[in-house]
Image 1 (cartoon, rainbow over the protein chains, first blue to last red):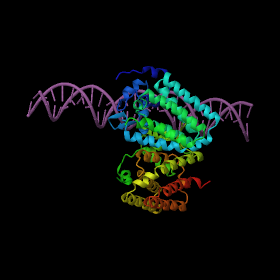
Image 2: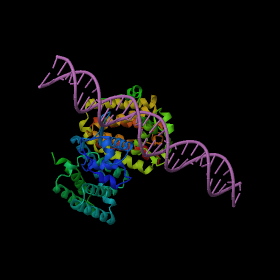
Image 3: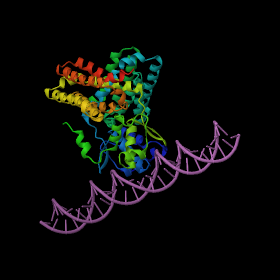
Image 4: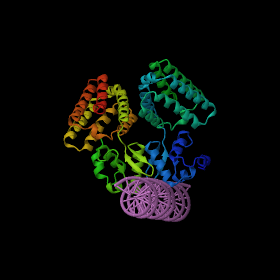
Length: 215
Length: 215
DNA sequence: GTATCCTAAATTGGCGCCAATATTGGTAAC
DNA sequence: GTTACCAATATTGGCGCCAATTTAGGATAC
């Protein structure tokens, strides 16, 4: 393992190491199963030992990495059962507030969502994996905000990271990504038409799709 | 399957400090707003500085304590809006799997639940606040397990801690506690009768009750 | 030639010190 | 008498060292 990404460390002077490691796991730069040696991370992100340890502790609390005492930390192996359970939870949470989203939708918020959906499509073509991932996050976050439950928005953002440790398998084909983009627009359409049931259907489909198809 | 917590607490000479601080926050021993000075915690729990800091970092990640840079950590002030949002989330999650709970309920699991409900009632009279709290947790955990989604069980345990920083206001009167105990048994009755709708109604009522009444 | 044991290198993780910063109390000036 | 400023104290938080444990490699015995 050689230090390939010294440029990421160079640009950000005081960025939280936890975020950096998290991103590298989510973007697949640190594949599942990788042992995260403290020395390596120290050099890779140009930070101190305590910073590395705090990051690893936080990530293991979030269950993104596993901690084996006296052996070290390694990126969690994606677990099919867990992945399914997590997407079930997301379906439950996001469809549960669909009614409220329809009620709270204003022309303004719909315009914002259109913009974010378009930005996602743009990033499909021109952006990095990370930018694309974050564009997707931003869209869903904005949509969920209409549910008028800030805690739920944060919670979904949180559990979303929980099994996205398999970004490769989830965002594999371009066809699927483009389908996701189209679904975003369809959700906005349902929102505009105040059709809560259709919105729920679309959300469930949208979330389950990536996890279910590989089987 | 049933793990006895009292053993682990007594036997393990080196119990995790995070758990100890967490418990003291949940039981109201460390009231909301309290500044958690590192020196104090060090002495209080007879542990080292790094242990204290790791615990504080973990608790601030869980948003149970707030961190003000160069000022320290203090127990989160309970927030009415957040509390309401969290119980809404709990209602969504726990009622969502009610159908599956009804389907998966066996005579065995119902017997276990009866035992836990009785144990809760017992602790109402003879137990400490902590034992009582944990008995309640154990009952709801066992109930949720019937939903056949381990991630959801863990998630609920997690968000449950998120606003329980107001244990005093939640468990104030004996009358309410006894009502909770009765509701546990009613839930089991609904489960036994395979009445999913009644179970949902009871769960929603049970969760919302403590938070809504004070208003 | 292979398996086992023992030694050496590497890695984790506990612990304490010290600098940077905030807070409090006291003093002086208005 | 009150306010503002300064100094002393207390608290946080960064950093590095060293012990404990594991792993890998080599040597020896069978």
